[in-house]
Image (cartoon, rainbow, N blue to C red; front, side, top):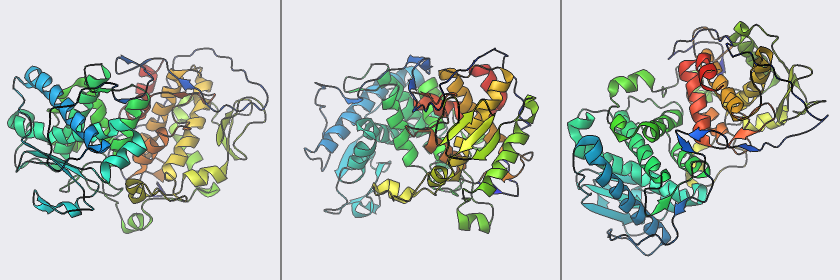
Length: 489
C-alpha cells in the first residue's frame, strides 16, 4: 500500500452504512482480554461446518495405478491415491457436466529433482523442483515427490497434495474438452489456470460431500488447508496476468477455487478471457518507486494517520461518530480487549499496539515460504496490518448504526466491510492511500492466520472456516458495502 497517487481497476463510491438498525447492548468486564473462540454457525456454500482430521481415510483402498519412478514413500502413496480419486471424480462428473466420457491420463511420473535427471516435456527434472505439472505432449501428470509434496503435507496437510494434483488434472480436462471449455492454441495462460483452479474446487466439494473412497475433507480446517496451499503457490506481487505463464494472485486463485466449490465444473469451463479481463486483480507495479519498495509502506504513526483519513472518508456516509485511532498497548481500559488492536466502545477509540502491528506489517518472504525456510523477520505485509486496524474501526461503525456486533455473521460482515474499504481505497475517490499489487493477498494472508481479527466480531471471536472469511472480504471488494448489509445479517 502507498500514499499519494491513484490507480483504479474498479469503480467505487463513498461507503454508506445501510445496516438494519438493531438495538444492541454490549457488556464486558473491565480489562477483559479475549483470545477469540471459533464461531461455527452457518454453512460453507450450503454444506455444514465440519471439524475432523482431513486426508486419507482409515482403510482407504490401495489404488490400482502405476507411475513411472514411483517409490513406496508416503508422498507417492498419497499422490497415487489423489490421482485415483480425481479420476473417479471426472469419470462420474464429466458425462453429467459435459456429456462426454473422461479418458484417464496416459502417463504418470514421480521424480526426485535432487537425484537422477530425466528429460520430460522439454525440460530436465533436475530443474523442476517444487513442481507438479501436466504435459499435453505425453498426456502426462508428473510430480516432485522429494521436495514439493513433502513440503505441502508438512505445511498444510495431506489434502494440499490432493488439491495440487487435482489442479494439474484440470489441465488434462481442458485438453479433453477443447472447445467445450473454450480452449485452443490461443487461450491465455491465466484463463487455463483459472479454469484448473476452479475444476479443483469442484473436486474438493465432491470430497467434502463424502463421495470419495480415498479422502475425507472437513469444511473448516481441511478446506482452510487447501486454500492455504493454493495461496502459497501464487504469483509474486507486481506480476501481470496478461503475461505467459501467469497463474494469478492469491486473491484471484482463491476466487476460482471457491467458484468451483460453489457452482461446479460446468461453471469453470465458462471462464474465458472476457471474464478474466473483467475481474482479475493481478497487475504490475505502476512506477519505478513502487517496484523498488515492492509497494510496502512503513508501519508508523504517520502512515496510521493516512489510514485514519482513508477510513473516515470511506465511512463518512454512515452518519455516526468515527472511531479515533490511538497509540497504546492494543487493549482497552474498560470492556473487552482484542490485542494487538482493540475497539474500545466506551471511548469510541481503536487502541493500537504499534510494535506488534509493525511486526505483522513487515514484508512477506514468498520465496522462503515456498522452501519452508521462513525468515523470523518476515511478516505479512503492510496491508495485513492496516486491515487489522480497519477491522476494529468498523466495529465502531457497526455499533453506531445499530448492527449486531456479536456472532459469526458480525465477523463475516466485518471482513466484508474491510473489503469494501479496500475497494474504496482502490477507487479514484480514495483519499490518502492507494492499493499496491499484492495488498489484497496480504489481507488474505492475514485472514488465514489463526489469530486474525479480520473476520472476528467485536469480542474477537472469529469465523471458523477460511472459505467464508475470504469470500466475505471478496464480496466487499467486488460489490461494495451494500453486499455486506444484504448478505451478513
